[in-house]
Image 1 (cartoon, rainbow, N blue to C red):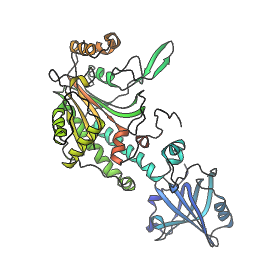
Image 2: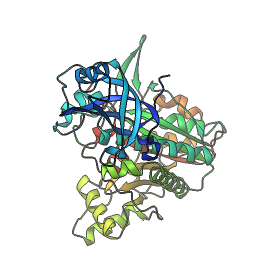
Image 3: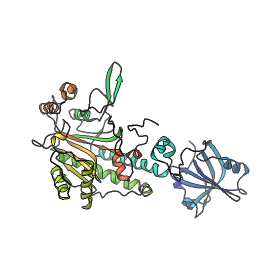
Image 4: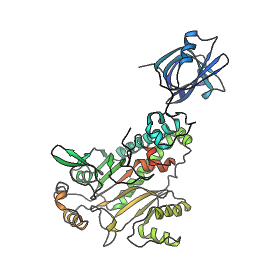
Length: 434
C-alpha cells in the first residue's frame, strides 16, 4: 500500500512532521517564486506549497508540468499556515506522478463551471469528484449501514432473492424480458413473492437491500427504471400496525446514523434532517377529509394524485410533520397479496416524506384460499403463481412487510432536484451508459 494520510487528518499541531499525501491535482497556480497545488482526496483538499528557492529543481519542474486531475503522491513537511485550507500546507520533498490526466477536461470537477445534469452523468466519474456530489453517496452509505445494523439488531436475517424471475412479482406488464436459454424470463420488479415465501420457512424476519427493475416509460424527476430498496418481511404479526412500528424504528435508526456520521456532508449539501419524533398515522379517509377541508376534493377510491399528495404534505408540514403514515387504503387500489380490512379497505400503508411516498407496505394474505380468490379478482392467472402459492398450502403464519425506495428517500432528505443524482450510474428511460 502507498503510505498516505487523508487531508482531513492533517492538523496544525502536527507542524514540522513529515507526511505523505496522495490524490488528484485540483488546482495549480503560480505567484512570483511560489507554486501552489491544491491536492484533493476523499477527506478534502490540502495545499501543497513550493517555494522555488526551498524545494529541489526536480520537484519544482515536476509540479510545473502537472495537468489538472493528475494523480500524485506528495511527501514532505507539514507546516501550520492559518490562511491555508485546514490551517496547514505541505512543502514537498518529492512528488511522484502516478497517473497524468488528459486535458482539456470535459467537465470541471470543482463545479465552478456549471454543467447540466445530462453532461454531468455523461462524465459521471469526473462529476463524482465534486465534494458536494461525493457527499450524497457518503450519506447514502451511512444510511444503508445504519439500516443494516438496526435490522440485524432487531433479529432480522439478511437474504438475497433472485433478480431473474419467471413471472411478474406484482402483476402488470411493466417487465423487462430477458432471454434465459430456451425460455423467456424477466428482471425482478421486487423480491415480494420470495420474501413472503420465506415466511413459511421459519425465517420469521428477513430483509434485503434489493434492486428493482421497472419497465415503465416515464421520464420524470421522481422515477428510475433501475432502483434500490430496503425490503423487509416479518411474520407472527397482529396487523399492519406492527409493520408500521418496524418501519418507524428503521427510519429513526437511519436518521440517527446519518446525524452521527455525516454532519460535514449535511452542511456541504445544506440539508436538514426531519424531526425524529413519533410519526403520526392517518387513515386514507382522514386524508380525504383533510384535503376536502383545504379545498381539494377526492372521491373515495380515487388514487391520490401527485398534486393531492403534495397538498397533503403541505397540510401535514403546517402541523409540524414532515414524515407521516397514510393507512387503510381502498382494497381495489392494492396488489393481490394485500390483506383486506373489511369489504372495501385494506390493511396497507404508505410512509410519506415531505409530500411524497417513500415506503409502501401492508399485512399480507396468509391463507391459500383467500390468496387464490384475490389473484383471480385482480385479473391474474392463478397458474402463473403455483410455486408461490405452494408455500401457503403447508402452514403460513400471519405476516407483512414493506419496501423503501432508497433513491427517492435520499432525494427528499438531501433536497436534490432529480432522483438521478441519488444513483451512482442511473438507468432511466433514455440512459443506458455509462
